[in-house]
Image (tube, rainbow, N blue to C red):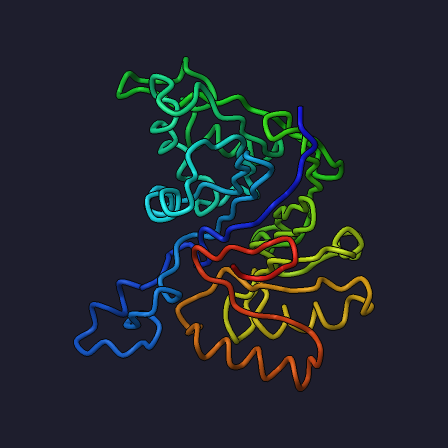
Length: 303
């Protein structure tokens, strides 16, 4: 087995659960939302997802409601075929509701005989409620062929290796993603550190122990929903301040790319605002909005 080299990260999706453009904007009598009416490709955004290239292997993160159109858009363009492993961040629809679409990969071994899927025990329990037939074929009703998965449960506090991706090591990055209405307890989401990249798609707070795990990352992809505060996501300003204030200069990520945008964030405007912030309030700190299909190399640069 070759030594795992993480070559790049591709942000397959950078939008909210509802995606962008928003139907409610486009069906108004006189649509005026600058993001939803934009023809700029950076303003069309599907559910948050990314893919790590490890040697010649593909490590996918999340498979949400819009995964299939995402794959149609970017897999041929970037010559992605196999899904060598899938990491699921949390048990929300925009992270795992596309699992059934993976039949296209494993049906009759068309692309591959199975897909290795990694998640925590609580996420697995929610998947079993939503898609019982994907976890146990005994629950199937005969309505169609099933994808072939090999399930792997990991502990969110322990790094682990993925054999199907040349034993690359993955470090889970626990973050809060809002709180339960009834109990007030935190709902935990997971980011992942893989090689020089750290990826956190949904977060409202990052504990100190996770900040320690982020130190020295070359690239951080981080949640930044909109300009105003939100109970379950970082705002753009919160994300920028976190990167500016939580690290010393030598251990701060070299580049930070924001993801998970609502339609209140227009790409050109957000880029200008981040550039201005980086020479003013955040002098010397590189933060930029990502977009669907962005490729980031090991130096943190778009290419």
